[in-house]
Length: 387
Image (cartoon, rainbow, N blue to C red; front, side, top):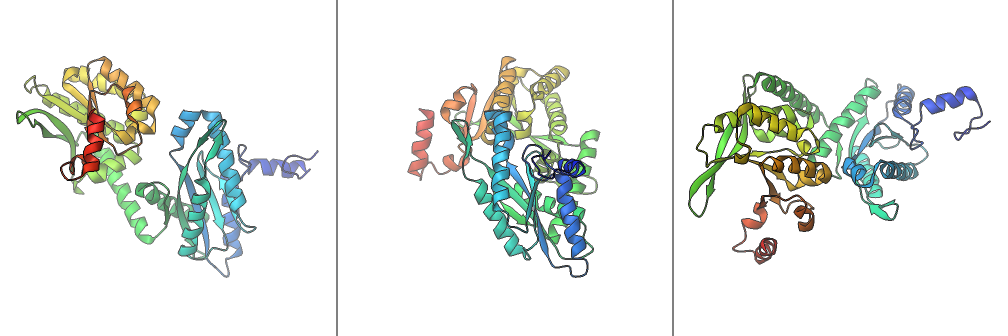
């Protein structure tokens, strides 16, 4: 009997199944490594360049949450069909992760070619996807590496492509980045900072600093915003603009945030009762259903009045997973914690959608506010929001 893979030979069928992604029908992680291993072996005597690429779908989790997992699977199948159709007779594409694909271009010899071909893939994937009677849109980020030397292995090439993908994701959605040696040094530095930050969080060495919040009418300080600050014994002062993104990407932001909130509420407990404490939640904390429980446990431990705490979330973080964020906001407001939306105007949320969250405060992004006296469009937008 012949299977869908069409060999009619049981041994061959089992091999094909072991190397095939069951959802999309593309090759899997093992098949991709086998293909690259074989190409490296073929070019041992004459190592002509070729390209390995890793493609990751941007923001696929919210698509799953919005449309459901079955619809998410249907979209992945459509993605696989588009990628397969874009490959020539020499090239290979495989699914190597939940929303991650790898491709091999044996005949792409330069960084310019690799970037151009990868941008074409992103363009192909940007067209709408049918999800029942609705449509969805996706973007993708790509990291590429080129084989130049017979000393390189498949694992090295894939790791380099993953490093380039990391830089592409940090640069924004829908980007292509080709690996360079400088990225390796940057990746090593990120790893050093990550390891030091993990030690610092475990040792309680990240400290809260407090920035006054002033009422412009009375010119009186009414509260303080909490800022995380870290000085490492080897790295020196590490700016939050450096260590906060690393904490987000490497899964340290939860313990880091809990440490800083605990220290901040312990300090603020002795302030005058009319001063409140403002604290920022990261986007990744808004998809963790335990975030509210962690905050309440800290307040109970430190004895800080929940009514004196204001939690700030960003519009971008809110829209990553609106359902999860709404649950967290409800949990916090239920015990008297105020919740404000920061940087409103930078994301894609609508005023109608925001009404469902019952925010206590809306902080309009400075891009609109800073030019309100000179920019009539900004003035009109702000007036419309306030109305």
